[in-house]
Amino acid sequence: MDQIVFHYDTVLSDIHMHRASGRHLMTRLNGVGQPVFMSTFKILAEGHDNNDPGRGVEKKEECEDPKEAEGKDTKPTQGQDRKEGGEINVAPFLDEDGDLDITHRPRKKSLDGCHRDLVCPVILKQSEPVLEQDENLDDDVGHCFKDVIKIEHTMATTLEDVGKQVWRGAFLLADFILSETVAFRGSTVLDLGAGTGLTSIIMATMAKTVYCTDVGEDLLNMCKRNVTLNKHMMEPAGGDVRVRQLDWLQHGLCTDADVEFSWTDEEVADLYNNTNFIIAADVCYDDDLTDGLFRTLYKLCSNFPHTCTIFFAIEKRMNFTLRHMDVSCEAYDHFSHCLSQLQDQMDGQCSFKVEQLPANFTQFLLYERIEHLELWKVTATPLFGEKARSDSEQISS
Ligand SMILES: C[S@@+](CC[C@H](N)C(=O)[O-])C[C@H]1O[C@@H](n2cnc3c(N)ncnc32)[C@H](O)[C@@H]1O
Image (tube, rainbow, N blue to C red; front, top):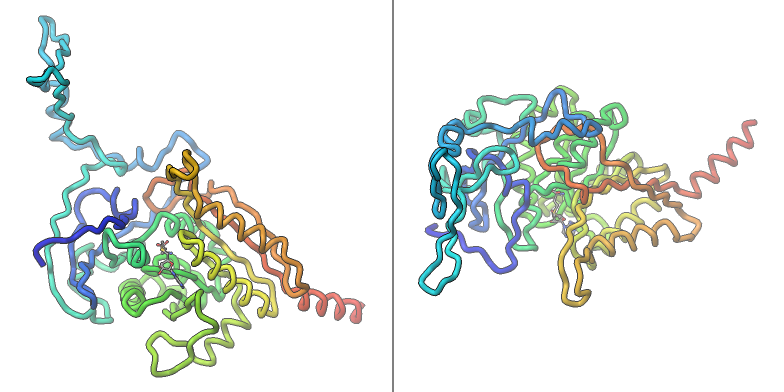
């Protein structure tokens, strides 16, 4: 492959864009010929207290480049002369037409505090993924560190392949999971639109079973490989991640044994009988898909015999639109609309309580927790179950 082609609708996640230098190794090409990269993310043992405004994670991790420090303020740049006594005389250069001709300063440090390197991919191998832990990949990050999660992903995808990147919402949700270990311990969890599987893997460090779901064989294969690569993290708690297909635009779950990533009857029963939590990170970016997602949630929760709690992580992405002649976030507005509809619906089957949670919990992963990252909690309570329970309570009292 000589060149990576970027289409006009290509998107690149901030998580991959702002990673410090280093680990941009293309490990292989996936089944459809896309370059696959490996990123390693460290889980900070202490975490970072977001209530302490003086301790920005970016600041804490800032790494001073000695070469840059050495050269700092010593040489005048274009348009700068040193006057006697060392004071800089800023004389902008003009080009032949009299326009300002400014040479840009050398690039400043990236958000992580280190230089952002050019991505110079090196193909290590070109093959179908082997679904077992790969010694060479372990060498890449030392060994199987319990606090290092290794994720294979692609970079700069079109919208239909966004699940092959890790998004900031996944990091916010992962932080929340890591700060609520007691609540999630031993639970059964459904991860919707799980993408590379990062949130499912983190969840399985405490949950009993995580159904890690998405669509597309390609993506699900990548996700399954990530689960295998990180089994060292889940082993201590015995958490089990099952990568399965769950399409918000389809009715029901595929139980055809000949189809990869289909569900067994036991799994379907377990999902309906035991799911305590549903998690979804960065899944609302297209209104039709958001509608499908909320329909799926509604159908699932109204068939659960028990209360289930849903957590959404969402990034409010502001865009300027000609239609509004202003910045707006239509995908977020549609998400809010769907939340209110869920809360307001009264069909006697299930009630939904919606609340936004403050995103001030401890930060365990390194990323910029911008104010537009939000966490929402929806509590779904089946009314029939509640009624049955209150009836039986009446009987027993
Ligand atoms: C922006 S990505 C988020 C991935 C991951 N949760 C994260 O935050 O890194 C949105 C995810 O929704 C999934 N998705 C899109 N349409 C879907 C559908 N019809 N059914 C299930 N998942 C879908 C995509 O495949 C993708 O993985």
